Amino acid sequence: MDSATTAVNDAGTARAVSSEQLRRIVDHARRAPSVHNTQPWRWQVSGSSLELWADRERALPVSDPLGRNLVISCGAALHHTVVAAAALGAEPVVDHLPDGPDSDLMARIALTPGTPTEKAIAELDHLRQRKTDRRRFTSWPVPEENLHHLAEAGAKWGATVLAVTDRELRLSVEDLLEDARRRQQADPRIAEETEAWIDHGREDGVPTQVLPQFEGARGERASRFGSGVMPGTAEPVIRGTDGLLVLSTVDDGTLSWLQTGASLSALWLQAAGNGLSIVPLSQLVEVAHTRVALQQLLEPPARVPQILVRVGWQEIGRDELPRTPRRMVDDVLG
Image 1: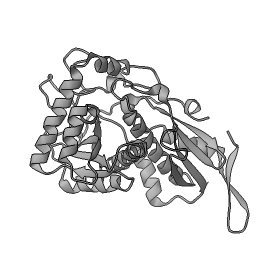
Image 2 (image 1 turned 45 degrees about the horizontal axis):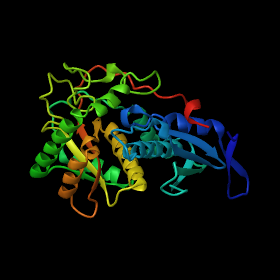
Image 3 (image 1 turned 90 degrees about the horizontal axis):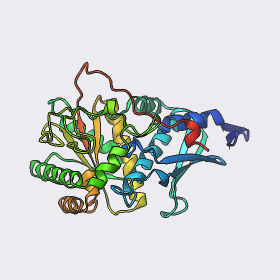
């Protein structure tokens, strides 16, 4: 790794983003959420830039054959990189897919020394707070105003974010979610792939202790990893008091998926700052039948659904869940 990335100030004096800053940036960026906590990414130093690469060895070939969720995960890591850099004194400029959509190089982030703003420091604090809590939310409804604020935060990063507040649309989406859940639950290959990432290792996967209580056989969870503390499979994926967001794009492909991941990360950090919990729901988009049905429900032009998000309040005083593990910095930074 280069000892430092350099910049020149107005007086012509070389300044640098130090190697220690780069390491701290990646240390925070690796906290990004990813499908099944596969962490399908790695960073490389290239001159004055950090490069974010997709790691296809961590793909999910059964449930994610196109790599949609893998790239969305990389998009979340990209947003985390930008947030961390801005708060740690390195001004980021992002070049998306510099080698084209068929390359595993997701982004090149040029870094020059900068001065962190109060907003950037607050966002880094939200990044540190962010985690996935799949336990059932309280029955307190999420005000529409809160949902729209989350949608606005996410939309700044390229995806269209729709707060689903219309009752008829909400019911239709709920039905599609249940249909997708049932279809995936009936596929033993998907169940096997999912189970393989439960207690996968010390540095990745989803530990059993962070999963919701579910009294059923492994492989028969009500949603991918359960949708909350529930008595059985009759529990719906979402409740009427849960907030619901749909992230969609104008077209489908690597750039759209990358932007979706960044938008997801942005609204998630906003939610963390507002005391809200987020649970991504990708099953509906993973099943071709339900994805097409949802696409027909969305308004043009952003009619390609990429991921859904469940939003709610966790109980006050509820025990803190342990954080899901992450690979070491040296394993993801080269």
